[in-house]
Length: 220
Image (cartoon, rainbow, N blue to C red):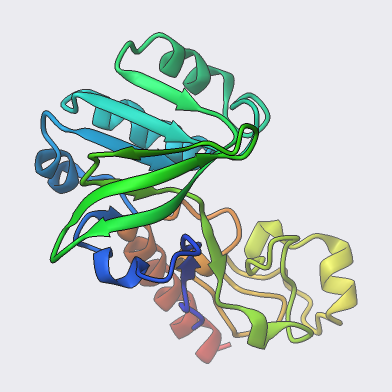
């Protein structure tokens, strides 16, 4: 059973580790929402997860800054989320912008961001930064062993094409079971799996379902 998950993409800042879970977060739940109630926050990223986080945080935050390196959100975010962001008055988009410094003691106190167009920097009293730039699957050790998608996530079950199975020399007359990889009797669940929901609850559910198939293949 492969359940090695992903590594969050991290900001290239020397003191980042000092503020992880002390002002820098990789998810936006009710807990984080309550921590920054009434404050300004920053969301880094331009994909759907960043858009969803920004809209969620805007419900209780004074101001939500979205920082992206691109010039617009349309290329990386669904039109529905882009429209929601445009219609939310306390969300401000900063294109061509990235955080270049974090400041504080035991907790993040302020950030410095920089425009990659003008070169100008700005300091903001922001105590909460949400890094929503995706993750890299922990699958480098699997390359050449089983089928991965273009981003390195493990393909399983119905996601495995006839070409994938042919290349892997699938030896069985049956098709792969749900969550089974291109290597018979090897399963993958959770964030490491291609097209998974990237949620703890779904990963736990996938694991319990996959175990039932493990018992089945052991008796095949």
